Length: 201
Image (cartoon, rainbow, N blue to C red):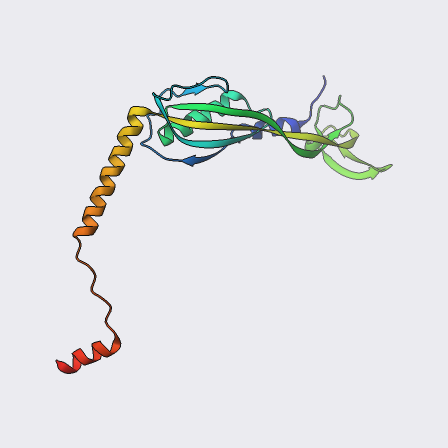
């Protein structure tokens, strides 16, 4: 039975749930958790009469992250900010450098190097002993690392957006009226004026 690197498995497990969404924009009332969020791919235009752009985001995820996971996270974010649709602007796989990975040379060894007991070097190569007492050498290789970078727009239903903007304007007008109705603060009094008023009393 051929074994595979437990480090690779760990990297895949860590990739799940590591979608980062850097959102900049407005926040409307959140949508229900079961609200359907529409996705528009890069080459598909959306109806500008039906949707209003409320924000944009840069999405980053480790290479190998499933598109389903990314879409689910984008749907959750869209609902949280009141967006009923997401427009994909660009999608790229970006080189982020290299990672140094240590593996067992003997692929037939059932125990992975990261679970083994590493000991002294023999002939310049590190060795390990697995749980069966077998020894083997370890090899470190530089492996290229990538991440997925996606740029998206968050779109709100035009009617919801217009209603939210009207409510905001009305609230701001009420706040301004309240501020105007409050009495004006008294002008500052100098120390000399304060002393003279005390003497006159």
